[in-house]
Length: 425
Image (cartoon, rainbow, N blue to C red; front, side):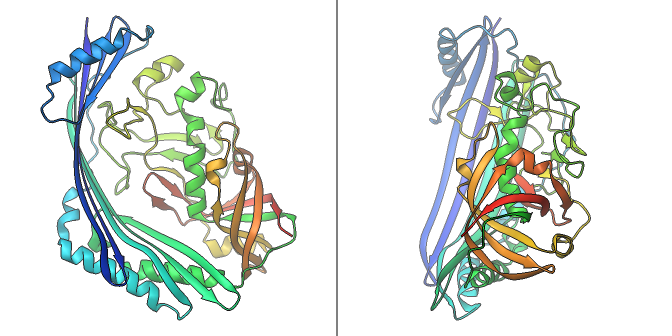
């Protein structure tokens, strides 16, 4: 018996870039595509097209042909009908501002960054970006769902210079409605951070307590997320295989994946296979509680599906992924974490995270930030390296900030870590 799934997608993009108060780039695009998966005799076939003239029947025939050359997988399955109760953010927010208003707001972003301080000598790529995606999924089990998701963002990089050198800093903010963002505040934040980095120093190599900035934590989460994917567990590419219901992190750490989070930037009512989205506690109080899975790998590892299928490109089959993946906030402001640390390194940016071993979590990356004494930022720090293991680091967290913030797929809070190897002079 032939089973099928038809996934259709329309994505509309807008990008505005300003340079010297003039429009440097204004790009719009509309991308349409359709992808088909079939299960025939226990084999999976896939085909896609970006041509509006391609018929569903033709794609199904192509997918059936492709299935003949792949191995049999008894666990192959398409989801049954499930109903989502999630009410997402209305995509109409993107249209609250006209194109001219969006251009004006991007100009404001640049001018605010430049005006913050006379030491701001340059501003790079002040941009406005927006995306609206419309999805329709049907399958032979009766699934028939449609939904839309929308997001916009401003981003900018400010460069500060004085007689001793130059430093840069970037800022990016997301929203569903451009009028909910303040370009002037975003520009000022980037410039304020760049100026604060001037006259940064190297520090002596040490084993130091460390506070990780919430954006750094969000970046780290995107790297360690695959360790919690059921396909990695099945293929023995996760250090957490066989460790369900055991302690893997500090009791202070709880990790959630929640595509139903109200006002979440990655929230959707259904995953990329048409299963109703659900909130999944991955780690609770340091205890591993769940692996993220789609319909196929849930059967492979013998666990209920968490409806965690994503589809980055229409030309690719869906895979397991994250949406609103975050560490649950604590009750301590950043300043309190600094007071508790007393003396140590507040890490505000890291370089080279893409080089981290995603299977083991081992890392050695460049870092910059501020040296803290008596709970106060003493001076900027640059030219140092921090090293260790990301998972071990999360097992030594002694304080969790109350400053949860999201950057699209992941959310971070400030974390106080017992000690990391810091290599400086």
